[in-house]
Image (cartoon, rainbow, N blue to C red):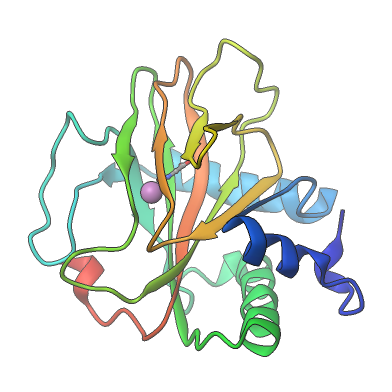
Amino acid sequence: MNIFFNEEDLSWIDKLAEQDYLIIDDFFNEKELIEIDTLFNYQIEDEKLIKAGVGAINYKIVDDVRGDFIYWLNESRDTTFINFFNRIKEITYLLNRYCYLSISGNEFHLALYPKGAFYTKHIDQFKDRKNRLISIIFYLNENWKPGDGGELKIYKEQEIIVPPIYNRLVMFKSDSIEHEVLVTNVNRKSITGWLLYQPAGLGFLS
Ligand code: OGA
Ligand code: NI
C-alpha cells in the first residue's frame, strides 16, 4: 500500500485521527527496503549502536525499563538514509497540510533489541520536553514469526498487539498512546522516531 505517493487518497490521515494510531504494511518499495536494511546492518557491524536510556534532561540507563541499543540518525551526517528521510518528510508535509499540525522537525534512531530485551509501558512524550507530536516506528525484521516476540502492545480500550514485521510502519500520537515492547526472543530491528512540534535542539544528545 504505497499511499504516500497519492495525495488523492488521504484515508490514512482520517484513520490516524480517528484511532490515534495507524499501521501501514509494505511501506517502502523493495529497492528502498533492501537499501535501508543494509545501511542499518552497516551501523550494527560498525558498532555504532549504544545502550539507550530514559528521559530528556535527566537521561539515565535503566535496564529494567528498556533494553535496546540505539544510534541517533543525523540527516546531514547520515546522508545515505535520504530515502528514509524523504518519506518522513512526505508524511510531515501531509500531516501539516491536512491535519493542521505544526511539525517542524524530527528525531530518529536505529534501535536494536537483543534477545531478552523489552521496553515497559510508557508514553513517548517527555515530562521535561513536550515537543513530540507523532511517534513513528518502522520494522526491519525479515521472516519474523509468532514466538519471536518483541510485539508492540498498544493500550487502547482494547489492547492491540502489533507484530514487528518486515516493512511495517506504525504511527501514533506521542502524548496519549500508552504502549510497550514485549520481550523479544530474537534480535529485533526498528527505526524509531518522532515528528516534533519544535526542533529537538541538543536535548536528545545529552
Ligand atoms: C520507543 C518505543 C516501540 C517499538 O522507542 O519509545 O516505544 O515497537 N518503541 O519499537
Ligand atoms: Ni515508545
